[in-house]
Image (tube, rainbow, N blue to C red):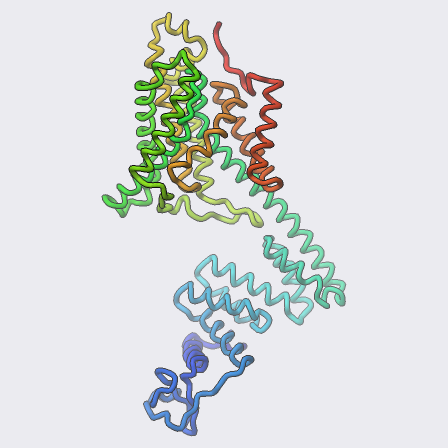
Length: 490
């Protein structure tokens, strides 16, 4: 093992062949020298030194005991880590060495770390080297290893340091004990900070999803006073439109498959907006003066859409190809990892908010929507086509729900019943924020999303929703108009 740190690559490969033959009983020893056999028990083989073929009648394969076999496996793993061509083979060798970290010379791991081209595997090798140094007989090397482990804080490094407290070195060496206590305190502090950042990040991503699910509902409810129970199904239609775009790319332009999520944004918005306009034109326009009937009608629409998708596509979860920009993540601090799929949802929600503000504040349609929201009768007297504005606004709110479906595809399971899990939360966001208020919708989504993520680890998912609901009810008792009351002309 010690020679592996200085041996050439050719010598290591040759040693690897011999070790593999020894472990597989293909190395036979006789009076004329060692033979390498093609298989165990073969009648002839090649001389281990000259390569000449000769019979193996008198040669015998040595039988390894448990201790010898462990040494051979460790040596093979070291050779694989240093010479294997594939990353998977080198990673497998490192996994074997980690089980016997105390028997691996530091120089072997240092050489493998310096030669490794894969960043992830290089970090794993560095971690294994630190673990080996923690078991070293040299006190100075152990203290240095403790400092190195503390410099890369994580839950695994905290467990590794805590395990050293029970070793004799921690009791017999005061300097090592002080270094160990300082390292544990530093890692514990970093892990707490990392956990806090992870909670904030998850809360922000969940709030982004809630905002996208509720913003269209806020426009519809604030303008038309319609409680749209089909809003969750519009989210589902947006997700299924995304899946349809993916399948179209898969069959027509497979080389551009990674771009399907971007291409699905206008498709999902347009498809769900058209469905919303059709629902308003065929069903809701007859029921504006009858709120209970409009509530039942949108519930019937939601049931129709769910069963239509079940018949047309099926009830199974859809499979999505995850593009690189929504797959994986990057470690930021301690155990906190910024995952690309949640970051995509956050940025997508921010872009949706910006575009919605532009539509409502800088376009004629937005001006008409704000006018009708403030005073419908006066807007009608001034000549605004309120029925047409209602239809376009319903389409806009439905299209925004479709965009929420696009953002959900890399995070949640997509099936016909996925929308029902968001419609209640969306209504809570709209009511808490204030009917028709975009700013209130944003603040309420952040508050409800953060509260759910903070409470859920302590009491469970169901209890967290109950606690949040009770809090909203108590708040509305004091402020029935919500956080931001909509301005209306009277």
